[in-house]
Image (cartoon, rainbow, N blue to C red; front, side, top):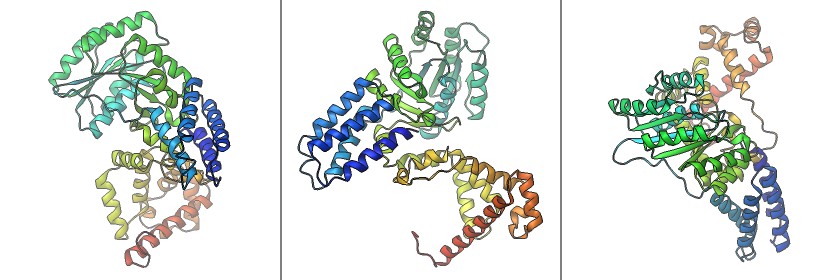
Length: 434
């Protein structure tokens, strides 16, 4: 996510910190590089120009020039301005304090709107202890209703569906049915559009009139860059949007939409989609994303992501087994599955401070799948007692997993070393924090 922008900003920051003293000339050169980096990341030209002008103005205000550590002060100015341009403060869902909260989701076809409805329902259920209810009112795309029904079942959230050609009637009936389930949040999935056409906009306005939503969220595909910004702006001119959800941020190496959309549409980004899995939705914190872009990491989001997907009881069980030296390859496989739920490894690394500076560090998520395949190729006894795995067994396991004997040997060696390390730590041979 935002790899191109992160790489460019890391180089600019390294260069500016290398100067013993920051001068007008240094600032001019750095801001020229910043402007180029923003434009290459598909940031709106007006937004890029305004960002550069704001940083220049603050940098030349005397704070940087007279500072003991001018390089760090200059980076702080860039960080603050990035945070401001991304929206400043985090804006949460505006929950109705005296009853149901109704959230209406709108967007273009292919933006991931229906999946995002389910992701948001899961997010509100886990993070805010809400009791969500989904209404399938996208009657334009035949598979949308079935898709939402399947996703609702997966996250254990009721979905209102009916055979009708009138989405307004579906919404009316859905809202009535939701009250019987004592749901406190209703999320309405509406028809996707190829463009902002008059007929479908009138249909959407009719749905808004009967549902009186507290939030109207526009789902935009970040991969489309400035097209996402333009479609959001056009939509907000037709309907009073309250916020935007940017999807497919995990595949957006440039980041132009994220940086431009707030300034261009004057609507807050409330969530970002960060993966295909149902867990792949994050609340949008401008300050945290600014830190990620500047390679400073985002430990808070990493911890929140872990809390969302990791089974606490299972984690304690595995921890106890490690300390008791009864940890098996079955347990190791269970641990891997919990890690995979958190999303791409590269994305998690981006949240760790300083990870961007580790050049050449590349972890392929397929490696975790390959390790799981090797473990699956073992017999239950071999997973419980890996010490019995001799040469012929290793060859059989490798063939069954479709991997090399070298990889089987490597896994067994690493597993053995890990267990030895845990035992040394338990006995106090290695100090805490090693």
